Length: 325
Ligand code: ATP
Ligand code: MG
Image (tube, rainbow, N blue to C red; front, side, top):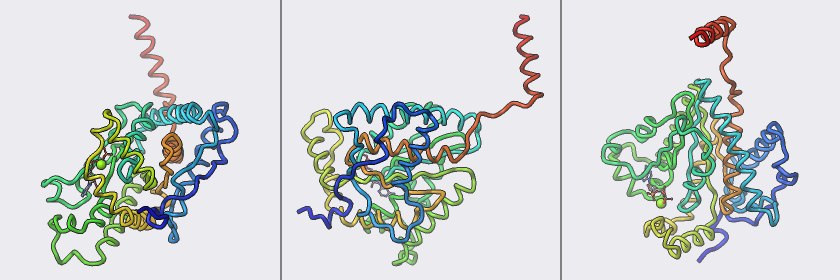
């Protein structure tokens, strides 16, 4: 049976204030300001009192009857802004961005990646999905397989699940920990705090190297997950998305929420924040995700490289060479 307590992340729908003036009429500058304001609402930096239940799973964007088309055009604007920023990121070739997605099954990770990153130049972006580790991966420390996928300078890397599984699924199922070939002596009650600290230090190392990290937790309610699972069973074109294992994991909802809460509390920092994104309303969640990524890219103060006077003169000379062919 579902209780409010068990489904800790489920709270009453909240109307979102920031979306009242028609967003489609905003200039790019205003849009940026609006995106930053929206992102701030769901950003967790460092908060020792962080509680998942303080964050909603449902938020209505307040577009009324126009909800769907309005949400689509707002997202479109966000996607265009992102594409422009990515072009500069690539040209500048200094910073890079890692976006991590973590969530319960059917929270909408795949759809969010598909829609939010739809305008991005594929050359400057790499998506990696992390599944159960292979035998080769288990022969290494847990960051090894992720380290290899950290984005190069000028690129955006997207992790669909990540090293955070090491303090989520592995924490909920201690049998997985036992299968990890870690020396017994190191498996103590401190292991989760040690891992969380290692992750925080690892992200600080990335930040010090010009790699910003944005972490997205798609906060779906247990009730909405049930609805989406039923849809996956009822609609033939969605059958492939459903597995019995998803139903088994659902039984551990409470343990997962506790692990997520501890993880966010102990790894959210100013430079590598978590975003607790309400995920019951997919179009709204995608707008928040775009806003969070825009906020991170904006903090890099991206600009196209400026050519020096010397380079400018050389370009003019080459132009004359071409014209006189
Ligand atoms: P979908 O939304 O399509 O179900 P998914 O990300 O859930 O996508 P799956 O293939 O269903 O993909 O599941 C991947 C599984 O791998 C998850 O259950 C996840 O918990 C598990 N996994 C990922 N990393 C680890 C890890 N380090 N140790 C153990 N299990 C892991
Ligand atoms: Mg799955």
